[in-house]
Image (cartoon, rainbow, N blue to C red; front, side, top):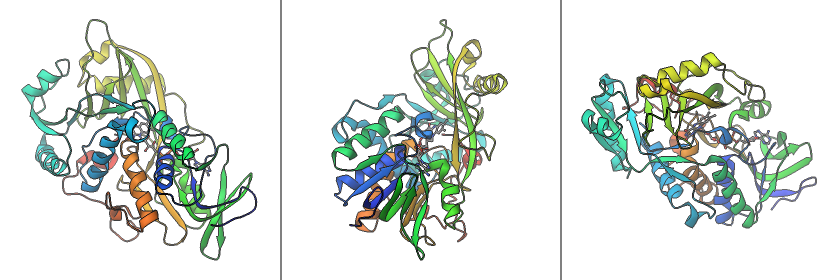
Length: 398
Ligand SMILES: Cc1cc2nc3c(=O)[nH]c(=O)nc-3n(C[C@H](O)[C@H](O)[C@H](O)COP(=O)(O)OP(=O)(O)OC[C@H]3O[C@@H](n4cnc5c(N)ncnc54)[C@H](O)[C@@H]3O)c2cc1C
């Protein structure tokens, strides 16, 4: 084990205590991987994790993402036994609606998801109309339906994982901003913080939307762009019950789910790029919020009669193929990147932590193959492009 001055040494230093960093810390500690330090410029879950809509569903077009989602779904549902704390999973049956000309891709993807163990079925229009009587579904030929899916409590997930990790010996340094990576030649040997250096044999950057400046300063520019998003909460008219269902809808380009009783959360597919993660609007404009709810009311007409009672904004860490970058950084030996989740990291975070811990401890991830998520895939001309990809997959809020 390394021992340095300043904040001391570690075998593994994890930068970022969002849901990813906390999940990795817990899984590494559970494997007894030496001394682990996790630091955050703020505190646990305060980054984009705390702003997440936190949908938990298994509909992806890329097999490895489905595998991560299925494994995570099982872990979320068994949370109290696996991690402890209160349940973090809230049921809300999930529906995926795509453009009519992509119905065959949907069928193909559902078949693949079922092979991966996802609880998903194809439903026709009359079945959907019966399940969600307040939705307008005349244009839907077929939809994917996940009766057991739902949404989570993201702040609690991150904090439960970190609590458990600390019980297993992980050192947590809140309010500790990493200013740069320490190097000895090419080799990364730790991090510099305002409180002093942390020497480490391995540095894991789970730094979300803050990743690019940190790694660019170390000489490698990761293909991650920031993208602004906003979510509105609509208090529904008392005259209409809220269907307890969640949905991602290519046609209205929105997603929505139940929130506190009588309220629906509505989120956007697209947003402006290049926002500063340290200085972005904390509220959408009224016009932005109204336009979003109007778009969703194409699918759920009753939303138009509701009142917008709250909003959340946030930033996605987008990669060119909207899939994460997970793996060693070849030009920065001793540095492993786990970022670029492109607006969909929460639901796969338990399995990502597990697979990354396997990669670190055993040299390869055995739960789910992480090979396709390699960080140099764009430079090597290997973006992820599954056969069943939807038109809006390349920028879908999920
Ligand atoms: C509005 C919104 C809605 C979303 N909805 C969903 C959804 O429905 N389903 C889903 O699966 N996903 C969703 N996501 C995406 C999901 O929330 C993220 O992918 C996930 O939370 C990312 O976790 P993370 O740990 O990588 O990042 P973060 O939670 O942002 O954590 C990164 C941490 O790193 C710290 N950090 C960064 N740089 C440094 C540094 N230099 N030194 C020290 N600390 C540092 C930060 O302070 C932060 O705490 C949504 C995201 C947003 C913004």
